[in-house]
Amino acid sequence: MTLLDYTALFIFVASWVGYTQFSRVKAKTTPCLSRCLHQTRIIWMRHVFDHDIRVSDASMLSNLDRHVAFFASSTMLVLAGVLTLFTQVDNVSAMLSAIPYATDKGPVMIQIKLSVLVVIFVMAFFQFTWSMRQYGFVNIMMGAAPFEEGTTKQHLMDYAKQMAVVQDQAGHAYNYGLRSYYFALAALCWFFHPLLFIFSSLAVVYILYSREFKSRALEAIKAGVNNLENDFSDSFPQ
Image (tube, rainbow, N blue to C red; front, side, top):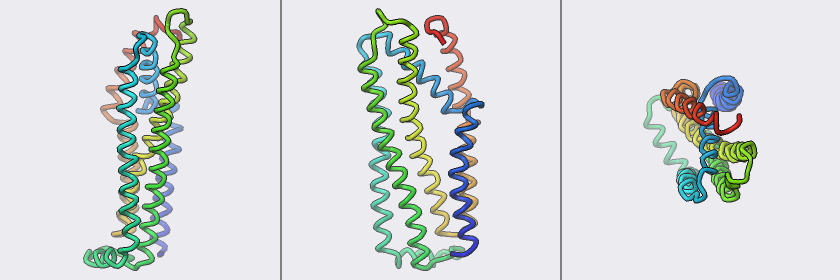
């Protein structure tokens, strides 16, 4: 590996870890998708107490779980494909040789880059499966949720918040898994040139930031949450 390769790999890791920590800290003081969705989940869990039959709520949770299961199974297929490429290093090297600006076409470098992809998708798989388990936990908590009759509003509110917290953790794990896919696409650029690897890593950070903190979807969700909070303020203690 050249100095440029080491630099590109360092920027890649720093971008991934740095943005993860940055988004966590900034979300505490700035409206973002994760923060607004947390409030929306609390409101959703409040609705659970409004009806005795909760089939619709369980169905919506199952729909979310199916999305995560799709990515978990897809990740296993991608991993199988990447591992297969270890037996086709010569063919990969020949393919890269046909690209004028591709660098580091040797077998060792190709194996190193494939190893990075394997690590990324293994991490994604663990995140997706953990998300699936936590959605199952929410289903169990929903089944054990008390009825509104004979229960204080404060107790209902506390239980709704706890269900929302578990659902939040499932959503975060799903988000981290998807983020692994984003950075895996950036890692693919390393096969062509380290400078392209650096550019794509920074581009992924910009895309994630713009969608999390500056998207139109955020504005719509934030406006909806504010309206719902006002509607529920008289019925549920804050």
